[in-house]
Structures are given as structure tokens and as C-alpha cells.
Image (cartoon, rainbow, N blue to C red; front, side, top):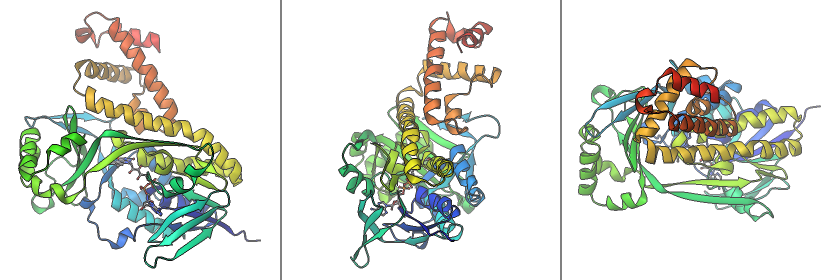
Length: 445
Ligand SMILES: Cc1cc2nc3c(=O)[nH]c(=O)nc-3n(C[C@H](O)[C@H](O)[C@H](O)COP(=O)(O)OP(=O)(O)OC[C@H]3O[C@@H](n4cnc5c(N)ncnc54)[C@H](O)[C@@H]3O)c2cc1C
């Protein structure tokens, strides 16, 4: 007898549309409710939407359901970071071993492809302009408002997933009303504003296409990721108090001229483009448990984070890998699936957020610190000598699928070893690559 299994997903963002494919492949009739209109009809050019870096965890989740190649068509590899100093000098650092790269994808581009995939591969029905305004998590009922007609409707399914992002309405209207549901949100001092660096003549890239560009300036930084059309999507991260000072066109122009002179040369009209994108805030939202009754939180609705490790989407996609494994393990007994999902995945969500926050401090306070740079140099040398014994934290997070919680713990242990070795070695600045130092690390592993 044909089973009629049904699922509702709230939010047709990155994780909602991918999870729809997984559920459809498992035989569910999937209905997605999305607050916005269909982004595929909005004709957003690649450069006008924020860019994300996609790495191993994300690819794994995409490839699991055979849709990775669709995304590869629009992904630009970045093999390392290119640092720009105030003199315009460039320094390049590879991200990983030869051939290892993270990939620049436009949020709009990926989301549009994922919607195609959810509909075509997943057979999902997507209702746009439907805003979730509440839910009965226990019984799998979602309350919605049709934004075109104002009509209020509800829908029910065997299982419901809240994939409605960092400011999840499902979480706010339903989970946060439950007894013993924990929730916290923390905004960091910094915000960000996007700027589109246009393509040069004949659509040429004005700076190296296959690198993530960073203009580190102590308390703030500018980054740039390539788009397919020759442009770069750039983001300026800075404390809100800094943005408050950039109120006139003259102040913006002067700021770029003196702080990012090589960027200003490429984009002398940056002050005119300043208002094209709003100033946005950055925060971390923690919650627990991630399920109740027939409903679960996935992606940013469960564990939104700051973007300094480039892992929010990758971690959200990895939720699909984990949930899919549990769905199979428990033969779709959702009570068991959800209970284990909350329990097992939560430490990884926490670690993802801790890693992102730590990297915020690293980028903010340490990237120019001589001790920090020396530590990284020693670590790289040791890891090259003993690749089986030492994988740098960045590689564990970005180029492996070691659990975030394990990677975080490994990173802390490695940091302690390095600090101990550096403190116990005389003239470490000149002896950093000596056999003695390498032997000391080996001993402590
Ligand atoms: C500046 C910045 C840079 C980032 N860079 C990276 C990066 O380089 N790499 C990376 O891996 N991650 C990055 N991230 C994180 C990444 O964007 C998120 O982790 C990812 O988008 C999470 O996907 P999601 O599907 O959970 O949420 P979203 O992508 O936010 O999707 C949520 C969806 O739900 C819809 N929705 C919201 N409310 C309702 C409602 N009431 N009813 C119905 N629908 C609703 C929204 O319209 C949206 O379509 C970055 C984030 C920021 C802010």
C-alpha cells in the first residue's frame, strides 16, 4: 500500500530547499511556505546578493542527494586569502594543501538553484508570500498569513521543519513559548555593509579571481569574493560606532582613500554606491532543545552564528546530513530522530558558534600579532612534517567533516601545546623551525 507521508518546511532559504530534496527522496510529500516572493523572478544580478563560501561539509550534504554538480556550475574556487596592506602590497596564504579550495557562491544564485532542485528533483510545492505567524509544534500545525490576500490559513503534516532563519518566526511564536526552552541572542559590536566592486573593462576581474581578498585594518576589515560576471561582492565589517562616523559622502570617500587606497583606485565612486546596501547587524542565537512534538528547528533557526568562519550555511547543510542519517537509523520514527538530533547535534551547533566567535577575535585582534603569526608558522611547519599527526584547526573545520565539537576541542588542545612549546623555548623567534621545537611538539601530542 502506498504510504502518504507528508512534511512541511517553513522557509525556502538555503537549508529549507536542500532539506526538501532529502525528504522528497525519502518519499515525503513536501510543502514549503516562504515569506518572500519567488527570488527567481526578482532578477537579482549575481553581484547584488551577498556571497558565501562553500566548503567540504556543504558539498557533502549537496552531493549526498546528487545536486552538488548543479551548484559547482556557479561556484568559483578560492585557493587562498590575498591580504592587501595600506601600501597596496599583496600577501598570499593558501587555505589548505595544494588543490584545496573554498568556493564563492552567491546567496541568490545558490538559493535560486536550490528552489529549482527542490521543485524538480524534490517535487516540492512552494507557496510564496506565505508568512508563518505561529505553530502548534506538538501536533505539526503551522499558522500562516497569505501576504497577497491577507487570508489566514493553517496546514498540518506528519513532520514540520522550521528553516526560517536566524529570526525564525517558528522559534519566536512557538518554541519560545514552551516551558524549559532555552534561547539567547547576542549581537556583537560589529555590523557590516556590502559594496559591489564592478567588473573591469570587458567584464575582466580587477583583482585575482580565485582568492578571498582581505584588507585587514586592526579593528575593521574589508573582504571581497568574486562573482561570475567579473564583479566582486565586498563586505566591510566594522563596529557600529565606526559606521556612525561615515555619514556623508565626503567622509566615506576620505575613509576609503586613506584606509583602502588600492580599493579606492579600482572604485573611485565607492561613496556613491555606499547607500546601495543597508548596514546590517551580526549576532549569535542559541537555542535548546531543537525539537518539540512533531517539529524541529534546522539551520540558522537553531544555531545562527556570526560569519567569521564562513560556516553558517555549511553547518546548516550539515544538519541535513545528520538528520538524514538519523532518519534512516530510526526508520523514520520521528520522535526518536528528533530526540537524538537535538542531543547529538547541539554540541556541534554550539562549537560552530564558538569557533565563529573565536575567529572574530582572531581577525579583529590577532591577525597582525607577531606571536600569533609565529605560532601559525610553527604549526604549518609541523603539520607539513607530520600531516597524519596534526591537522590545523582551519582545515579540520573547512576541509573535513570532523564534528565541530571535536574540531573545537582539538583546536584548544593544539593551541595549548603550541603556547607551551613557545614559552619553553629560548629565542623562539629565531629557533621556530628547529628540530628541537618540532621534537617538543611531537612529544606533547
Ligand atoms: C554577512 C554574512 C556572511 C555569511 N557568510 C557565510 C559564508 O561565507 N559561508 C557560510 O557557510 N555561511 C555564511 N553565512 C551564514 C549563512 O548565510 C546562513 O547560515 C544560512 O543562510 C542559513 O540558512 P537558513 O536556510 O537556515 O536560513 P536563511 O538562508 O536565512 O533562510 C531562511 C528563509 O526563511 C524565510 N522566512 C523567514 N521568516 C519566515 C516566516 N515567518 N515565514 C516563512 N518564511 C520565512 C526567509 O525569507 C528565507 O527564505 C553568512 C551570513 C552572513 C550574515
